[in-house]
Length: 344
Image 1 (tube, rainbow, N blue to C red):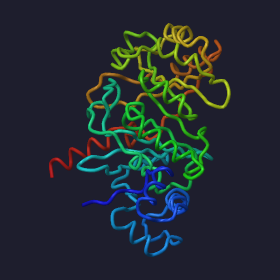
Image 2 (image 1 turned 30 degrees about the vertical axis):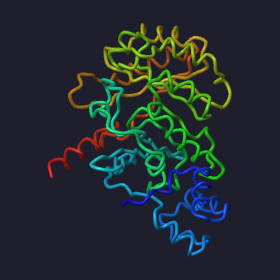
Image 3 (image 1 turned 45 degrees about the vertical axis):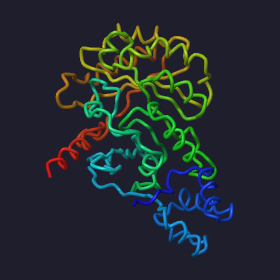
Image 4 (image 1 turned 135 degrees about the vertical axis):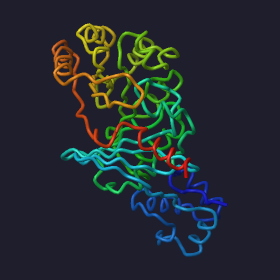
């Protein structure tokens, strides 16, 4: 029988574990330090635990760190990693170095239920939620881990559809017993789920990014079926109840599609929709995916769009496009790997 992973356990869970095994209470903090501060890969390395206690732990537990099984490297330094998550399933993480900053785009599910028209992961359908261990492992086992400055949960899956495990992973990332990161180094991206959005805002201090992509709601519903369950207008009204004017940041992600949502009419609708919210807009270049008849707008169009919004008081940036030569948009590598394994 496979052993249970220690990675992904909170301090409370480790305290319960050591008590159950008859180990001293302080061993929980020692184990947490080995896992999240010293980042060991085996229980043998936990040398301030007695040999007896290490052997006791090893009977049923392991660290649970798993290295990536594949990678793709871009000419611009971006690296896409593929992690195994049980069975014939894989998730992707994308490491994006940028001068003093290094960001990791982390996945929260195998596949996704949201079925956004422009997303390769959505074409896979939904398979499973990742555990906190599988989320944390993408960071723990990252070859460039020590260079990492930021994490964005914008990879495969919808984080608010797996909120318990995502919040647990965020606790480990930000708690003093864990990685002790500032929540301001972490951004969680969502299409917006009614049941999860309010809970996330109230239980976490991490930044929030909402996938918007069209201020014309029938069009947004065509691009993103989740709009039908929880409309952007309802979401904006909920968000107005919270203060994003201080350290915590609220942003809206907006992929600019050629001839679809790239005119001044859409810019004006965005201004109307988001009036009264302390937020920013991130304009994103579209990475083409197979079987989808959408094209990205050119840079001149995106620049005009940005300048119109900024001059009308809505702070807007164009996110640099990275890793296009390795299909850095999520879902491409894991789909190929699953197809390859199913043939062999």
